[in-house]
Image (cartoon, rainbow, N blue to C red; front, top):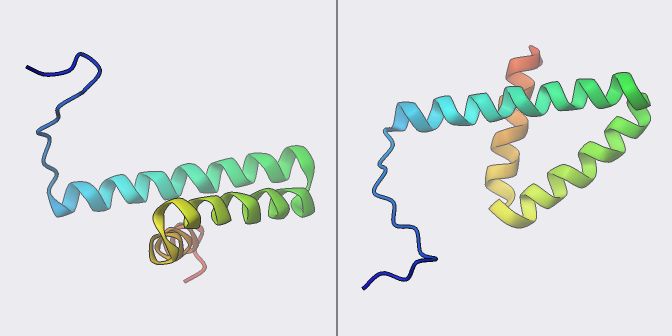
Length: 79
C-alpha cells in the first residue's frame, strides 16, 4: 500500500530533454538577474546573484553550479 503523501513518478527524460530543461533554467536566471539589475542596480544584483549561486552550489554541488554559470554566459554571449 502506498502512503498518500508519497508521489511515485516514472517520468524518464532523454538527454536532449535534460539539456533543453537546463538551458531554459539558464535563460530564466539571466532574466531574473537583468530584472534585479534594472530595479536595484548592478551592485545589488551582483550581491543577490552571489548569494543565489552559493545556495545553488550547496544544494546541487559545485559542478552543477559551474555548469549553470557557463550556460548563462553562453546565453548572454560571453563565451
